[in-house]
Length: 465
Ligand SMILES: *[C@@H]1O[C@H](CO)[C@@H](O)[C@H](O)[C@H]1NC(C)=O
Ligand SMILES: *[C@@H]1O[C@H](CO)[C@@H](O)[C@H](O)[C@H]1NC(C)=O
Ligand SMILES: *[C@@H]1O[C@H](CO)[C@@H](O)[C@H](O)[C@H]1NC(C)=O
Ligand SMILES: *[C@@H]1O[C@H](CO)[C@@H](O)[C@H](O)[C@H]1NC(C)=O
Ligand SMILES: [Fe+2]
Image (cartoon, rainbow, N blue to C red):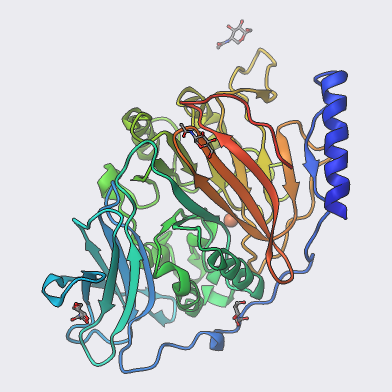
């Protein structure tokens, strides 16, 4: 009902926009709010360790090289026993002679009064494209078996579907987001826009919450790669309890293939997957001119060959175009630094998290200004990315439902509900983007758009809201 009214309001405002002047805007603020109260945290006991002596747990995988023929397999064991760091893998439907093994590097860490279990990360390489593999963890008394499918070989018209999730946490709402995503068989890999466990919202950054999160997302992340970006909840900087190494738990637990893109930090890196080139940035690392992240990004953008990977997608935690009072303008200094490059390089989409609500921008830029000319408001720009805020995974901090009014012209659609998105790349020109709000029983598509590629089809899209 509310949605229908909104559609009507949208059509009306479009007509007004077309007939009167450019001052009007066509942005939609959905009146739908799922729940205003923060969702309850799933208790630690919800996620007991798997049964069996020293059973591998908290299994997750991510791409392990630049092109998609490698996988990083990560798991945890309570004891560092013989064979607990070994992964055996084979192509589905092949005979045992094809079985290969790899040894993980094993590490552990201390945080305040917590000692982690043993964290294993194995990188397997030289996999066949577009192939289903099984893998088995541990050669000891308790083994566990999982599987994944490698992506097709990189190429301009390779269809591929990414799920997009941010700020997930581990509440009952987070669970709904995760299972809604998993109930749809389309998603092949997840772009995760930062803020994983929210352990830091608990006393002394209760590190058991990192373990619980690992067990929670295993249901999905053991079977398809999650491409991680770091958010502010990964910083875990707490000098009052003697913890001064930023990002320690995150870096120990979640490995990414940053060296494959010549990055010097796991907080920023890139991968190619199917027809997409994904660049991950860090809102919480230095990015001004002369800093490592800045120099890396400058070189990185030159490497992108749109004839090979037409879809240029960026992930960063703190949004640049956000019309919510929550975290308003926190991404501004990074926007000022990098936005001209994104426009020059015709980035297709920027996914961000941080704000616990959903928002999609128009294609706008705000780069034609300097400190004296007074030109500093966003203008429609067909070379600009679409900015999507998807920090609506459903974490313990609750929904961000305090928008700025009037809705700024850069904001196309905004809604204070939890959910996730799918980006279905069809070919070099078209991708179907849908945002799925969490409903009572099923996830409802509440925003969608045929995204047109900036390099091959730089027409401005018409919203389907
Ligand atoms: C090796 O390969 C076969 C498939 O032919 C499989 O059944 C077997 O369990 C594999 N794994 C291990 C750990 O030996
Ligand atoms: C999470 O969601 C799934 C699917 O709806 C459900 O089976 C499971 O019980 C939920 N877990 C919790 C702790 O609510
Ligand atoms: C800023 O813009 C004004 C007006 O276009 C121009 O006169 C001035 O030279 C610009 N300043 C810089 C530093 O580019
Ligand atoms: C690309 O995909 C879109 C959407 O499915 C389709 O309409 C279009 O014809 C496709 N282009 C080519 C060249 O196949
Ligand atoms: Fe955040």
